[in-house]
Image 1 (cartoon, rainbow, N blue to C red):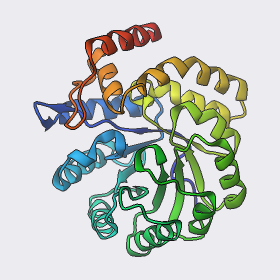
Image 2: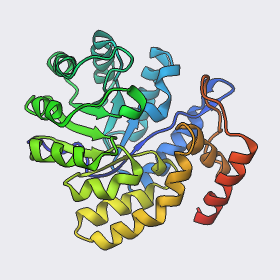
Image 3: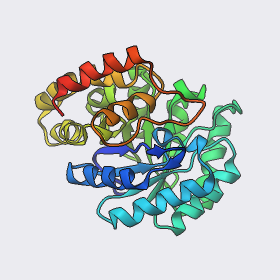
Image 4: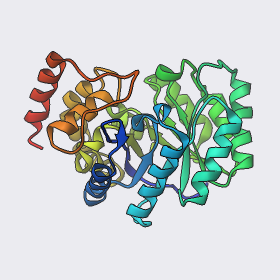
Length: 293
């Protein structure tokens, strides 16, 4: 098994926008906030970063900015995933050149490939790029579920080092962990299932809520890894209301709204996403205010 890219809590960073453009000032401050509060790695241009509404040039510039800002302090994992295998490979080569440490590759969406197609897709990426591959299963977004047997087949590839699991089926997750052993690292892709997945052997979480609460998510993950399971469970249950609120509408709309309430960035999202209604904002504000952050 290769060494872990990170252990603990990594943040799937939002991309702040202002008047339709990337707000690099807020982005830089948010990176600093993450570093100062124990975040173990940063995911740039993952789903939470809205890459599907960003140009390739915008994505390149955002990753490059993060690489320079972090300056090697924590790993930068760049989102390369898509439903065009050749374009994923092309993007990974760009991100490697500008200094990213790994790539996050979501399962291809819309094309509706088979499980054998997934093996071919990820093998092609791993064979033709230098950045270590973190696979990502999120059937709620892609309409495609990566089965445990498929993960296990790919876990033997030397350039596939980790898997982000965002399927809520703990039976499936248990079977996946049984089949792969310690060949690759598993991370939770759902904030609400951080503790359960770590109980099965996961090494941490790639979190959305940590955009707002990095210290708390880091505490949850590291307490479990340090053998303090009760403390980790208490933190998971304490965070459950805000996690539910953050995912009540399509992410990253709610997390951006919550961050805007704390002056961290604008709530602006790009179409086809839209901002929360006044009623939704009021309900979210009550929960955010109750956290005391």
